[in-house]
Image (tube, rainbow over all chains, first blue to last red; front, side, top):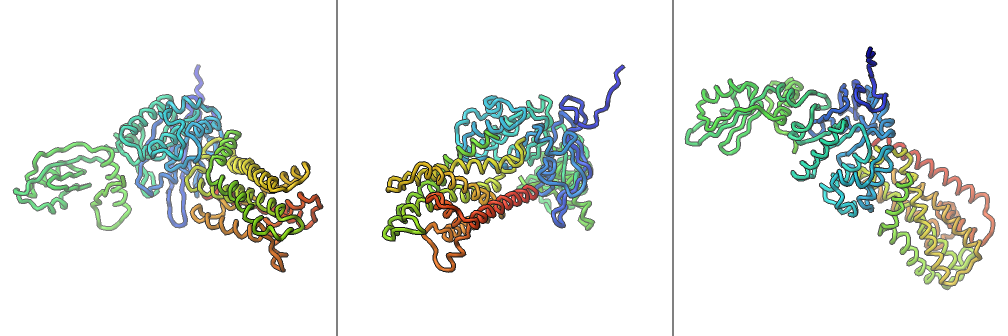
Length: 333
Length: 240
């Protein structure tokens, strides 16, 4: 009796089940000879909380700009809620917090948020928005006199000034201290729980790990991973090995570099930290090399190491040079 | 949109730079100029006090509509506020419309302040002459507001400041703000935008009729500046 109509686009307004929020189809963007974004295809679904990871210059910001219609792709197509990005924005379906989105100077916080509420087709009450973003107490301050963390919260308030279906956040917690970040993500979770789709780019991988239910990894303009945080960690297949070496044992630390299955190696003082593709082989080799590891620990890795590993693999694949072991240098933090 | 316009006006009136360049500078210059030229008696067919009343009112108007406007646009492009606004449901032209509207609101005080000062100095016009002069000056300000928008989008935000200063200064000098330019160069200078603007003001002041040439030139500038503003604005949207 139920003839289920498959909704292939988000044209039917709101409502759960409308299959896609946003879609990239073979999207590329060139700046001269530089391929900032190279043939990306992906679909965002309603209600997802998606983390967008990548080092500086990986193509994240360019992709977000294209998603929002601020730039046109050189090739491929992008749809937002089944239409053009611009139309989705005019319909008030997208709330955006840009990385360095400037704020209007010479106005009070309340005046600015009031503007954001009024221009949104389904804007909320100013006081509610101020309250949610936790900026009620600075509502009468001039925008130019805010600290970096306060500015971020004002930007967040602008992004959530109305009933949008998708919230896009580019590096939202930059400049916030730990407490402010926790508070921020608590608010953000509430947005996701209300059924909104949230896409956020971040440098803080632990945020992606604890908040996102889907993680996208961009590297050199390509989308190299798309899955849950657990899947990406599993795909990296890494284990973390750490131990101390005592100088009186007389081992040559440079031997560590030739251990098998190394993905990353970090020696600080007497403490050695290793990411390994094959922990068993690496540990066996440590003993064979004449080390006596003190306080040996072998654990699974966090998303950060997994990120370093898969971007490193990609670099290795890209360079056909003989350097097989690429040491993750860590992303800029 | 209305909210944006209101907010833009509020910002301008709160701004200290506006106060200095648009209200205080013309007042100070007026006193200086009248003092310097006081013995000459008349300039371009009107008394010195009347000449500089118009010149300073146009100075205030042009400062507000051109430099303030252009500077703000450049700053807001740089800070990313202009981008953020494009991610709201505001129509694309909303930003520029709000800028021009706030300019129009901010030039009015500039004109009135100079009028009040000139009146205190003994300049007397009939009610309809004051009104006509005020309206002419105010309307002319829109042309410079368009030029301000064009300048604000004319180059990368970091390099706009000198562009504005050069255009502004050259226009003022050629326009006779600091006194008439004579000779054959003067006959060229009087076709520059600022000179025409001043001339229109004096025409409104004395009630004489405007020649077809200057009127056509003013309309021509209006078309060129508005076209330029629209073109540069579109170019910026495509690039950013």
